[in-house]
Amino acid sequence: MKYLKFITLKKVSYALQLILFLAFSFFSSCSNDDSSNDNGIAWDESIDGELSGNMNSPTIINLELGNNRIIGSSTPSPGAQCTTFQGGPPDPVIPYFPNHESYTDLFSFTLPPNYRISNIIVESLEIEPIHTFEDFPCVGELNSQLGAFTAINNSNQIDWNSDNVINFISMPSQHPLVGAGFAKNVGDDLLSKYRDDFPLDGYEINSADLEIKNGTYTFWWKEGANQANYILNFIVEEFSN
Image (cartoon, rainbow, N blue to C red; front, top):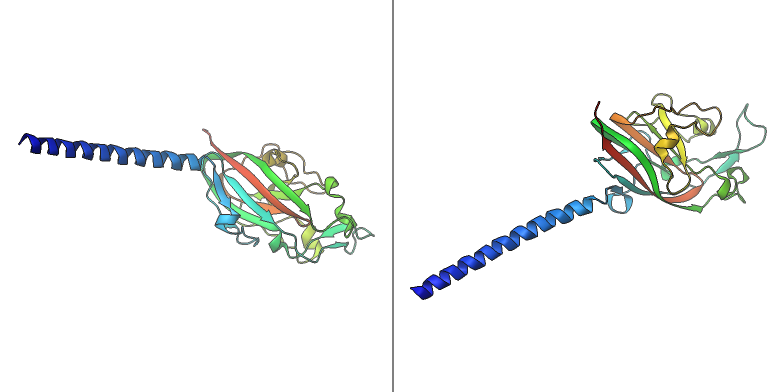
C-alpha cells in the first residue's frame, strides 16, 4: 500500500509538473507573439504580395495602435519621356512616365473613432536610378530630385491616370488629396510634410491643421524614375475629444 501510495503521489507530481510546463510554454508563446507584434509590420510585399497599382482598387490594410510598417518597392515602367503639351512649356521639360501600375503603390485603411495617425516615418529608403539624367535630362540628377511623390486622401480610391501627359500632371478632383509631399530621406515625417506647403507651384493641397483620424483614407506612393525599396511606419495613437 505504501508503495502504491508512493507511485500515485509520484504520478501526481509528474502530472503537476507537466501542467506547469504546458502553462509556462503557453504563456511564453503568448509573450513571444506579443513581441513579434512589436515589430508592427502591417504589410510586407515579400510575404503579403504586391501592393495594388490600381487607382480604383487599393490594397486594404488594417492598421493597429502603435507601429504599422509598410515594406514595399516600386519599379519604373518603360516609355519615359521628356515632353510638353499644347499651351505648355515650349521645350520638352516635363518628365512623363506612363503605365503607372508598376511604379505606384496604393493602400486604404480605416481608423475607428478616437484613433489617428501621429506620424508617417520613412524608416528605410533605397533608390536606384533607372530613367537617368543622361537619357532623360528633364528628370534631373538624382541628388537634385525632390524624391518619391506620396499623398493621402479621405476616400477609398484616387482618381488619377497616366494615360496622357495632361492627366499625369493633374491632381485628383473627385477624390481630392488632403496631403502630399516627397519622400527623400530616411527620418522624413510625411505627415509633417503634408502640413507644410507643397513644394511645387500651382498646387494647393496641404493644410497646417491636417488630422488623419476617424475615417477611411488612401495612401499613394509614386516613383516613376527610380527603383525604390522603402519602409514607411504609420504610427497610430489614441486620443480623447
